[in-house]
Image (cartoon, rainbow, N blue to C red; front, side, top):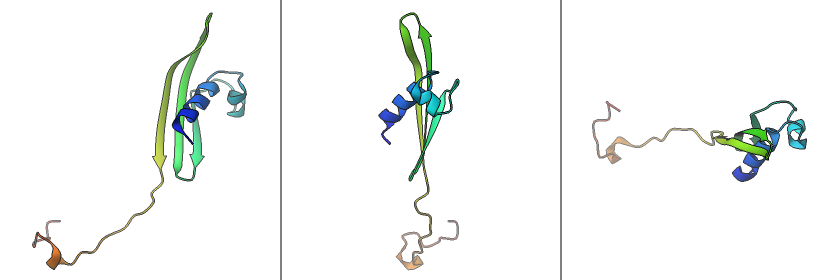
Length: 88
C-alpha cells in the first residue's frame, strides 16, 4: 500500500462516524495498522473539529518489514587481508 493512501485512510479513521472509522472499529482512534506480505504499516492521525470543519493536526507513518534472509558467509582465511581473525 502506498504511504500517501495509508495516511489518508488514517486521517479518515480518526474522524468518528466516517465510513472508514466504522470499518476500523468505530470510536475514538488515533491509529490503524495494515498487514501486508512484506510486514506491517502503522499509520495514525489526530483530527479535531472546529466551526470551519475538520482539521488534521498530526499524521504519522511507520513501516516494518519481515526478515527476508538471514545467514552466514564462510570465507577461507587465506583470502582475507587480515590474517589474524581470532579477534573477529
